Length: 436
Image 1 (cartoon, rainbow, N blue to C red):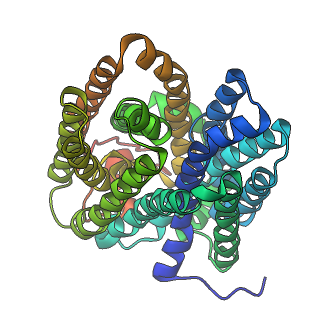
Image 2: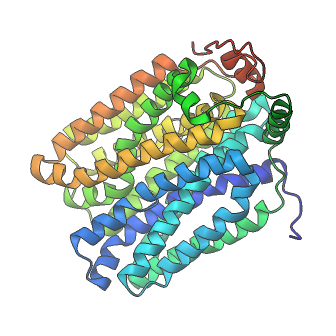
Image 3: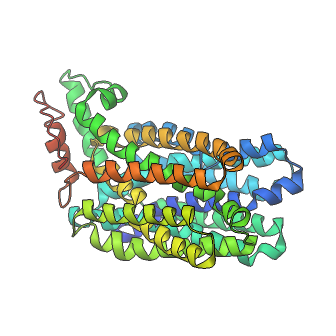
């Protein structure tokens, strides 16, 4: 390809940009939905379809379910070679759309590409990171995830006078970022752990050993069920609040708080700025050094307090600023950062990405269903009831995360795998949990 070798932190950043692109796509779609609706005269059913099949919901869910197994079968580099090409087709279609079918197809293609790219990015970063800096490297993905919305919201504010043209330009910016990232990724080496696992599988096949049913094992082995409970528990319940916020928070600011669209977008941009700061100084700097259970608990607690304030206090500027600081900071050391880390640590190499794809599918499907219900919930029962539901979800995720936080700090992925599964390639297969 002519691209230079991409190694070290440069490799981590090029892979982590999948998260910038995903989060940026969600915000770009959410901030332009009203403009597209007016331009194309889209009815409520059409708006529902765009929301449900987007990178925020079912589109990404399908992509993850497809991308996870492909990553384990053909390699991490296989996805990096083709995924962003598909993504670029999707965002280009959206950027130049002049009718609803173009916009819908572009939205679906973008969603699928995003879903396929995120699990492999977390997997690759974890597999290629040094054990004493794994959280710092995985945290780069969370950093990119936070910078994406921050930049996109600021762009939405700056380009607002241009109307729909401004939204088209936001998608063009994502197209350019994807193109540069794709070029950088062509210099990546394949994951060494994946190559070693493939070599081992070939040896086993030559010796007549059965590989086993990967998907079945994911649910039949006790260690896997325990990991699924932790990971789906923290990520789904946190995401039912956070995912809904990604799409509906500007709507809440405007309709409940009485803010203008510009004020709502600016407030969200500052919220994500706090996430960026705390991701770097909190998660990336501390999660390899101090108790991860403590760090997760602090982040989850801050998020809970943020929603208690927003739900039960008048939505004045002091309340909104407190909410933005608390929630933005909590997300930096919150469920997504730890999910990205733990989901890469708690499954063996041969189905690490497949496990992530399956869980991502479950979580995003849950968000798709809840996003469909939430507007009706807020309209019929009021914001306070919706807020109490959000608080309940956050409390559940806090308890699950604090109780089941695994003890994986400072260990190589191979060490963790051996502790949890024993010799997967032999006959012993002693399954030892490394949960505290």
